[in-house]
Image (cartoon, rainbow, N blue to C red; front, side, top):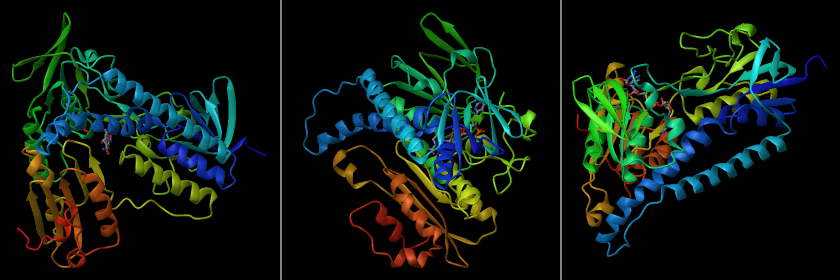
Length: 449
Ligand code: NDP
């Protein structure tokens, strides 16, 4: 045979593992190299441990709410080391699952850092291996801007293994990770400040929902500050001192920077193989996920497009099917739902109200804002907001947005309806499940605008 492998995958994160397993199941000879941890960001320092932390951080509120339902809870005491141990055990279990899935598929797992040395050759350690096709699925890495004292800040990579929970923390950024971690830390009892450089966090999401979420987050007690830029961080004894552009200073025990993630492409040998990257290092791909070298492919965060695990796995699936399964297809990037696991959740699919208007769609906006039933006895002041954006001409639902408990669970189903082209009339013809928050999506009768 001309090559050692039919496919060599670099990076065993969500996308790489999916592509490797499926390709091997189709009969391809597959190798997959991983230098750090099986499962990549999602399993180790992302989605999974983050969601476990979100669950952990909710209990304080749950204990408080329980009083209204007649319960007298014991004094709540939180043990961070126990949470870390249990979380690490679960991740260890997932490593085992990933390793077994790869083994059972017939793909060969190679431990070590892979580097391209020419368009068909990959080196791991001392060993050179050739492959007919190569897939780069090396993911991304947190990005911290350079400024005096930036080295005192940690990122989402470190926050999952903090030896102690700080008393005070400052989270910098206004994207998914910053909003999620401000909620987690606050929920675990840390006095939390979140700083965002712009007027309103979560740029690009539905404006009304962003404003609504900001109010809910502040109500819970996070010190959320907009138009706040960090000038420097210095270490003073046991704590950190942050200087902000408006001249104010902040004293804290931990600074978490969540200011975006960049593609993991340095020292990968992309130049040696002739693979073109964009400024910033992201790998350019066409709609068949081919790089500038047609037999080298890239999927997931390393392409710096839609940085979501299910997108990377969808790309891995489509690639394996196209290359080895005789089922050529493409990824449908329209209508990708997502959820920010803030407290409360903020989930969405389709167009925001602003984007729909900008597109020139004549739209009707249906909305419902209410106190969740649980809070009638729980007693906390919490509101839920739900919105549907409907095209006036076709009656198609263009966007659905929700800020409230379990928004991610609810929007997933709405995304299916929207994929099927559901109209508002179809939503109206659907009978609700009572009493749920989700039923509001099928009982919105009058548009607001
Ligand atoms: P995001 O790109 O979502 O947000 C980055 C934030 O940092 C923005 O608010 C941005 O502000 C701000 N920022 C960027 N540069 C600077 C700077 N130099 N100084 C101050 N602020 C800055 O990145 P995250 O790190 O939150 O997450 C990375 C990606 O991971 C996300 O885009 C998402 O795709 C994915 N993710 C998904 C999750 C989910 O599905 N639940 C959870 C976590 C991550 P501005 O808006 O002004 O540019």
